[in-house]
Length: 225
Image (cartoon, rainbow, N blue to C red; front, side, top):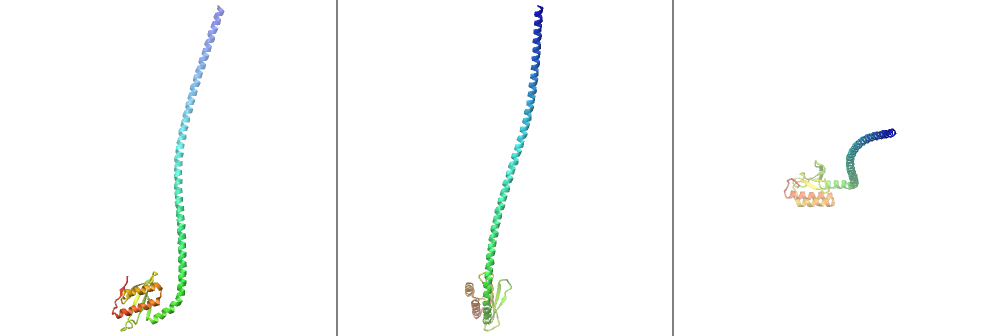
């Protein structure tokens, strides 16, 4: 009986020890589980913070990228405008240089022609001045000459008849004269001059108009439009 009691007490003691050990192990497991959960929660919080920070960085980078693309587009448009302007300027310069070259060539040709013509004009002009009782003066303005005749009035050979010619354009134009001339006759003589450039015939025709005007008794000056 005593042996049974001892064995029973030993069994109870062993059971208590095992229960106590299992209880302690359970508490240890629970504590480890809580610690593991706490660490995982902390890791989750860290990951959430990193994720939020990363999202903020991505959003900032997207905004910077959009700004960069906008700047690139603006610079590209400005570059294209400058290139277009430069091409237009180069074209304008080329056309201007071509025009200048054409004008220089025309001026050289005109100078050569004038020099060649002057060899014949000077003696011819002296001839007409002598035969038409004519002298040529400046009219006080650029591209204007004054032609003065005498011996057009039988009553007063020294009395002068004159007219001024504007030579500033290709077609010459009589701008004023004294005495007043008949318009149709004047237009006819000037038109013939602009067609054939025969100055001698023009001067002779103008003298004839003045002689006719004096015969008709007119001696008033007139400015033509």
